[in-house]
Image 1: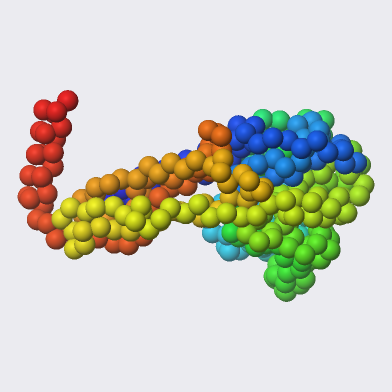
Image 2 (image 1 turned 180 degrees about the horizontal axis):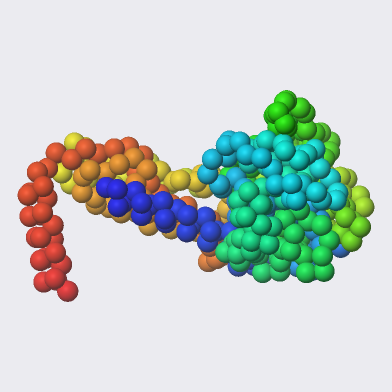
Length: 387
């Protein structure tokens, strides 16, 4: 059973990476509205779970993205082990221009605290300190950033700095930043921290408690805003990546080089929340059962690992097709969480949603190993004779 659980974890990871990388393809399935462009050099609004593009204006133009870069830096930091282990910051790393969380030479801190420092006060010192701690140097951490960008399909993104300071070869697009944000928000800790207006945490020499405030004023200005990151440099001007939730719908909005970003994000959210309503496509209970041989139960219930709730406009539900790829027979034991199949949704023939299916309960084996082997041999013999 260890092999099956390991297989499920690998398949689930592949599904997560594939979902992010496939957003560009999926987005092409959705018609684009004809709306006057907003006053930004790059802008996009997407629906988080499907990657559906609701609005786009120069969304694929390569532009500097300032401190919204820290979405990637923070995400990679949160994937590290021992997030709460104390260490002394590298002196060279924290000597950096721009915004800061207040690190000084000799300070003790944790990686988790550095994520707060990146996402709330947008500390360049926090980003640099995390990069050196994780990879040994900033250039080596930047390599990890670019590798992950390739893995999740950010075709027009290239990182040079971990903090977002200006460089001619440091760029992204409004669309790529939206895809990155949707990917990062699959980590509950990232979403939790990015949604905080302020936080009290401990660091220093010796560590002491202090408050950090979030530069993202949309958290207070727009009801339902749950993040994500601001940015500003002379070259990039005002950049904002935000996310908002309403009635089981989560939208992500990105503006690059936009003077009126607070109001533009709010207006775009109002427009598209009004057009969308969430529909639950969870399969019926009788479809989500798998027969078990040699177990203490005859069937086990299965469940989708991610809720298939899709925001749709009026009349679009009829264009959705469902595909359930579920094992119909398993040998006991079957463990809760074990991979059993996939569930996919399509619109007009193009995939818009996919989630692994796992066992929702255990099935304990009551069959002697010898009997199980005999049955397996008979099945193999029958299959060989049939084909």
